[in-house]
Structure formats: C-alpha cells, structure tokens
Image 1 (tube, rainbow, N blue to C red):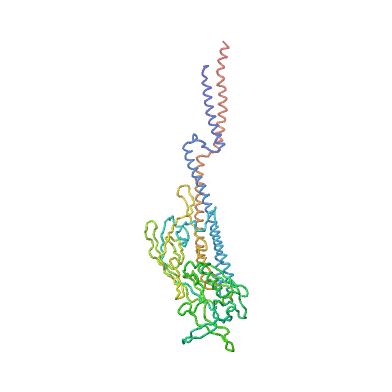
Image 2 (spheres, rainbow, N blue to C red):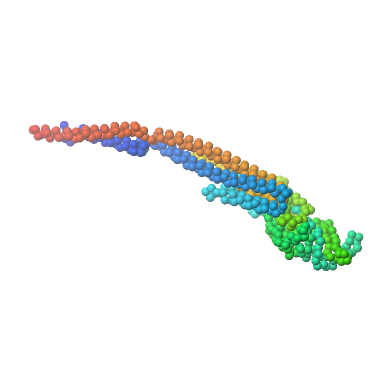
Length: 561
C-alpha cells in the first residue's frame, strides 16, 4: 500500500479519459452523420473524400450550365418558330400578289403587309436575347469588320475558330440598267400654242403650232382622263417607286402639276430617295422628256397637228415620250411603279431595255502574308457565297467599280468598268461555349446564324408587280429553308445537351454514392458504439471512485495502532 502514488486510480482515470474521447467522437458522428469529421478520423479517407466533393460540386455546376444552355436554345428556337410563321405568311402574300386578278392598289396593300413582316423579322433578329446576349443577329457565330462601308458580311453559322484578315479585290464587268418609256405624251394636247417648224421626211419644212411638252399641264394630257372623261388627278395621287433591292419611295402628283414638275419629282425620287445619284456624273437624267433625237433611246416620231372643221390648228398629237432610266445594273436597279390603277395606265410604262446582271472577278488574299487564296473567281451578282467558310457570305455594293456616265450624244447612261475595287475584311469566331464537364476543355460549342431580312435575302421580296411577286416566291422558299435548317441545328444542339445533362446526373449520383461510403457514418453502428462507450464511461467512473478510496484504508490502519 502506497500513499504517494495511487496506481489504481491513475489507471482508472486514464482508461476513463480514453473512453470519454471515444464517446465524444461517437457523439460527433451521430450529430454530424459523418464518419470522417477531421483528418484524425481517417487521413486518407478525408483526402479522397475532398477530391470527390470537388468533382461532385463540378458536376452539379455543369448540370446548371447545361440547363442554362438548353434554356438559351429554347429561346432561340421559339423565336425562329415565330420567324417561320412570318415567312409562311409572306409566301402566301407573294402567291396572292402573283395573280393578275389583282389591281396595283391591291398589290400596294399586300406590299404594305410584306414590309411589316420584314420589319418583324428584323425585330426578331435584333432583339431575341438570353441574359442580354443577342442570339439571332449573327454575333453568336462570328464578328467582322470591313474597311469599306459598302461591304457587309452575312453570318450563317460558326467559322470553326477562324480568325483572319482578308484582302478582297473586285473587278466588275458592268451589266445593263433598265430603261423604260412612257406613252404619257401620246395623246391629244390643247392649250397655249407657239410656232415651230419641223422637217418632213421628204425634206420640206412645215410650220406648226405646238405646246412645249415640259410646259404642258397634266390636265392638258389626254392620258390623265379616264374612260368617262374624268380627270384622274382631281384628287392628289401617290405614285410609289420600288427598286429591285427593296428600297421604296413615293411622290405625290397634284392636279395643277405641270409635266415638267411631275418629271422632276420622279427624277429626284430616283436620284436621292433611292440613292442612285451616287453612281453617276449626271443625276438629272433619270426621268426626262425625250427630245426626238434620232438613233438614241429617246427616238420619237414627229408631231402631228390637229385641225378643226375650218382648218384651224386646235392642238397636236405626238409620239414624244417620258423616258425613265435606272443607273444600277441588274435586278437590284429595276424600277417598278405602283399606285392608282388609272394613274399607272396613264403612265403606260414599257421596258425598252431590259436589265442584265453585272459579273465580277473576285480575288482573295491573306492580308498578313499576301498568300492568294482565290484568283479571278467569276461570279454573277454581288454576293460571294461560302467566303472561305460554308457559313460565311460577303455582300458588296453591286455598283462597286462601276460608274454610270452620261452619254449626251446617245442620250443614255453608259455603265463603265472602272479600276478594281479593294477592301479588307477581318473576321473572328465568336461561338458560344458551354462548360459541360468538370475538367478543362470539357465543353460544348454552339453557333447561330444571322436571321435578319437582309441575311435571308428577304429585303428583295417585292409584291408590287406580278413578275416581282412570282420571283419573290423562290426567295421566300430559300429563306424558309434557311430557317428550317437553323431550327434543326438548334434541336440537335438541345438533344445533345439533354444527353449530356443525363450523363452528368448519373456521374454525379455515382460519385456521391462513393463519397458517402467513405465519409458518411453508419448510424446504427454509431448508436451502438455510443451506448457502449457511455456504459464504459459510467463503469470506469465508478471504478475511479473506488480507486480513490483505497488510501483511506491506511488511515484506518494507523488509527488502530
């Protein structure tokens, strides 16, 4: 028996401390539900668990990314569905306008709706967004810039990571611009006369009394009266001029207009409102009264006097004409006139020179290295399709390298081939990337094309005449095909992301199961161990009490002595 050291109590206390430590860990496992709460519980298990936890969090984030991607695709597909409906309606209108049972006024109403549909298409293209990112304006596909404002890029999809600068050289072989002649002057004139002398076919001269055409009032021209003798300009009339590229303008004709004034209005509308003045050195010849010059596009027959019963000259007939010219070659420059049916009949326009498309030689170089990629490629029309990539087109001004020079002797615009026209074009891939995996470069790339009316070529849809309406049907069919292809591509993207989403969910579930086996506590076993350690703690505490009472027996022994 010892007084200084109570070995039994020390042993009991040490055992009790160990048991209480185990009891505390057991309580921690029960309260947290985890088997590994710190590295002391299982150092290697904790390391494996943390790596798995990082991967699981990555999977969960990737699932959110894929879900956001699907939402974006659904937004774009919904907008394209609406665009498809607009094009279907536009096609119905074009078919309707191509029927000759309609009047020009009917077609004018149809064109008004077509123009509204074009505007709606542009709104869809410019305002369809997801998280403030435009989806259908071509920016999710490629970005581009040009050194010339007349050169535009049309993005139909992605360009596979391409980023480059190109020098484009264009050499034009000018086509022909449309010329129309009106029989507006082939009627009876009355009014104030002046003397004139004309030379007959046999060389003899004849004095006649005439009215100068430009000074004639529209009211004095027989064509401006309907079959019942009513002057068709008693109420003002709007004459709409539609250019083949879709540009439109209007002039108002009034009952007190002179022929000169009316022709000037038409000339200014073509020159300024339709923008053709920029292509010529003489912007006053788009609409003129022919001067009777033989051997030119303005050739006319001589005037014929009109006599009353007494032999007095009361007026004259003439074959002089109103000539309307375009300075822009090809269909883009063709001019169409629409308005009140009586007004159109009064004008009596006939095409005396059909337009023909310009052809171009295209050369393309790498702007940095000078390496020539394309040499003198021949194209018709002003659009380079599949420019270095199947999803990228380039459109340029159809009058690039062409100047309409006025030929006074021939009374016509000569479309001349000028020097080559060059520009630089920079393009860069701007596809959208979805991070759909937990590691670097585990992603999914998508692109959208430009769905504006210009990119779809819908800006050329014109229902103002039977011919242009019929031509527009094919244009709309091509646009519908573009929309359908884009929708099909989006659906394939969506299907792929949904498959990726399902795979991510499976991977996340399996990895979570593996992590659970490492870190999660078996609650039944933990409860059993908790009870075990609790009982041991209580019994060891009782033993410690007994061990602490052992030295007291020494005092009893001493008292007995």
